[in-house]
Image (tube, rainbow over all chains, first blue to last red; front, side):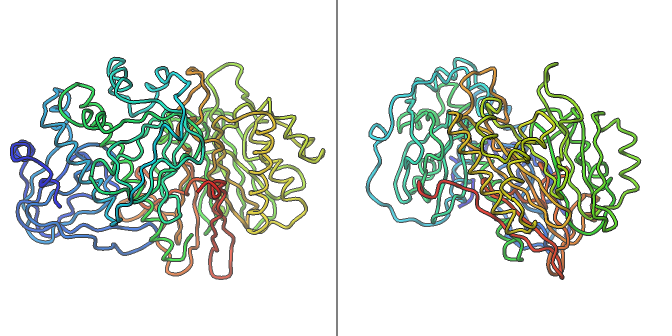
Length: 301
Length: 308
């Protein structure tokens, strides 16, 4: 599913109105893997080949051909970082470049469409990362049975974390008012593969391990979200969430998650943008893990 | 919070690791990309050259970017195994600054050298519990005041009289984690303590990416630093040799068969991380020379299998 399909018609039109047209000759490298990323590219005519250079391998792997109507490099709309692929024009290709700075301008003016666009990018990326199909299973752990109300005051610590970079003290109060703080012991299972969930956790202190097929695939520490993909995609969780180190979590239940991802209060714009940025970091981490797996196939550890 | 690198492979000039790459180790002293702390308390290195049995050793508290002796030396020395470290300490007059605290550590009578990137919380409090678990000669060999040198002494203690092999080092590393965990538990320390290690004897090289009680920062806001809330980074690359690619970016050129070179560093030496891979959390990577190239092995240091 294309990112644009996540958007209402008027939001699509707004996003596309930001694009700057450019024509690429055949063979032109639009961007290199590893280059700084600051814009997404809408393919209007022609074809872009996306290639992956795995560490330690001489030849690129062809990943995908982007055709007219597709948006390439959409994580750049939300967060900086580096390109995870090299993009090459296979034939004469007409593109529209949408710069993150233009979307940020809309976001900082609290334009409702900007939140929906950022949320659509988050949903799109979450859908790609959650591509494995998992059958839904019943049984929802009840947090109140596994945790106790938190003893620590998170207010002095939250501003330290990059997630809260754009939050004012009032935004933080608003967020805290919508969630519930719990102290959770190491080893507690917070979410089970196959479970449907419409809430998420923010790690205030301690750490959560994300496990799939018996292996740890991510470690989520202070100031980061966990479990946000299931409510974003509406699909069952594809991994378990386990408390790796005892600590304190802010649980954002269904009502809070919905309110924080819907245009309304100012904190929703900040939260949705921080959530999307977190997801882009997860995507980069996943890509690095794939690179490591590619090296494994070459005989490296 | 220190930065370090370890290299095992085809001979190259030291300056290819320290100065020439855009994010070489010396640049990381004043412009680290992945942790916002300057590393100005000095540079130390050990480098094996021309199959010599003992390494070249260099230590200086001069700010590395202004160290002309280092720049000149690095231009002329070729090495096939190197361990280098730049030290970052608290910005306070009472911080433990001085040549005696520069890494890598290499105690008399052993070939193994070690550098550490991280910080053991409450270390002064835990020191007696750790000392009680080490042999007296290991404790007496410690000259500096850092937690890092004690970690080194613990690793040597756990290695005992065994020859330095991948298997022996891996086993000693696991024991080291266990000994430190016991000492922390005995002292009641349960706050985040990072322990990224780089070690080599010139033939076998290892790194470990490990944090005790990750995420459990001290409950005093003034004591919480970025390094206590993030899992410290550790990257590696394998290939034929470390050299500039067609675009001028320093990278490990792909190897036809077995890798001939391994480069591990706190952060990639290139401006961007493409071509580098992160060592997984709670994991060690060990390498030794074989007849047709390097043999590499990963080691799980995790302790949450029961919980899983």
